[in-house]
Amino acid sequence: MERVGGLEARAFANPRADRTARFRPEQAAVINARAVHAAHAEISRWPGYAPTPLVSLPALAREAGVAQVWCKNEGLRFGLGSFKAMGGSYAVLRHLVEHLRTSGHAVTSADLIADRFRERTAAITVTSATDGNHGRSVAWGAQLFGCRCVIYMHAGVSVGRVRAIEAFGADVVRVQGNYDDSVRVCADDARRLGRQVISDTAYPGYTDIPRTVMHGYGVMVEETLTQMPAGVRPTHLFVQGGCGGFAAAIHGRFWELWGADRPRLTVVEPVRADCVYRSGEAGHPVAVRGGLETVMGGLACGEVSMVAWPILDVGTDVFMAIGDDWAIRAMQRLAAGPSGDLKIVAGEAGAAGVGGLMASVATESIRRIIGLDDHSRVLTIISEGATDEEVYRTIVGRTPTDVIAA
Ligand SMILES: Cc1ncc(COP(=O)(O)O)c(C=O)c1O
View 1 (spheres, rainbow, N blue to C red):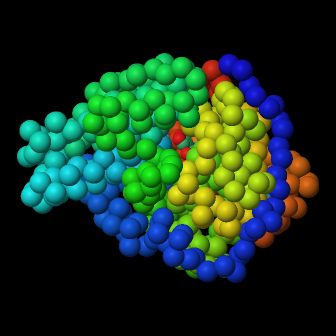
View 2 (tube, protein in one colour; view 1 turned 60 degrees about the vertical axis):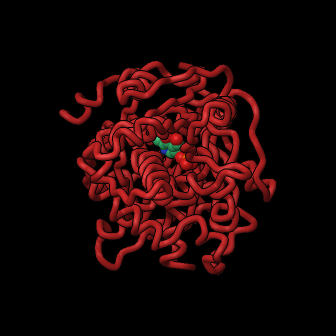
View 3 (tube, rainbow, N blue to C red; view 1 turned 60 degrees about the horizontal axis):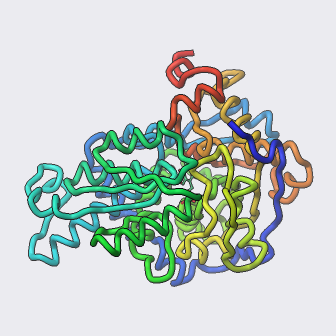
């Protein structure tokens, strides 16, 4: 496996960050309490729902010289292995409910799960491009709610991740090129064949569904609020960036809730797939071209989601890019769990937030930019578990089962 960027780490303070700025209507149009509460009420009724754990890692906090590190472990989400389980599937459900409503049928998720409208839903095909986790969520949602599904995956996505999607009954189409190429082929085929695109990234003329996907992600914040010790808030948030939807959903909710007291957001990306970072430098969305090579597969996006940008533009405090070895170190550190820290199975993209924290404390200039000190309370999200067990074993040297058993 080629590692890109080694232990490189770069970061800069966002010159447009405005911590006193109100959460404005253009941001609330993307994510807001009402939409997230609706998603939470819906998703928490699905079979297999359980809040993912929020784990305190005191030894990691000591090593980092901060007061506290919390990791929310999305590897345990719905047995799908990532937070994405709540985004694409939720958007599939909303699409089916809306489609049936316009043909005169008021249906609930329970009706669809019980196959009461199968004849109608089986005629609908949802589709998406993915580098793994989003497609898994769409395919799972299609299976759960009873419609057809076609998923597009670029050449760099591992065979294990293709198999995982096929296991949910979806057809998989392989596409030459990178993630953004697969997005375009998917959109062209959907137009031609009358399929509904369920994408986690927004582009001109296509924004409603990516917003709905982000509402599903917002459930993580609702859970975190009840899991944090009463009256305690994180001061810093490290969230990994692909197209930026994840970071914008999480941070948008904290911003709406806590205003200027929200945690300081660092968006962490791979050095060669740093579209949020580059957009932060330019002051407007810019695309990163090329192969977007990184072991952090879920983050290999070259274009910022246009609905995420209004939140990240002013809401991001620090933009950061890290080499693959930081993600790998974070995976190994989380699996080892020294000095009594709980052992956590984190996938390559999943560990990137912790990798960003480790890179920041190893680089004094970055630590200062982020403003970490011994009073800091850091919240990170392990956004995926071992979504490809073979890749995980190659990197960590043990299987996920062995890590947990140890
Ligand atoms: C595990 C994981 N973490 C983080 C992300 C980033 O999410 P977004 O593309 O919404 O920024 C992804 C995206 O696929 C992912 O799979």
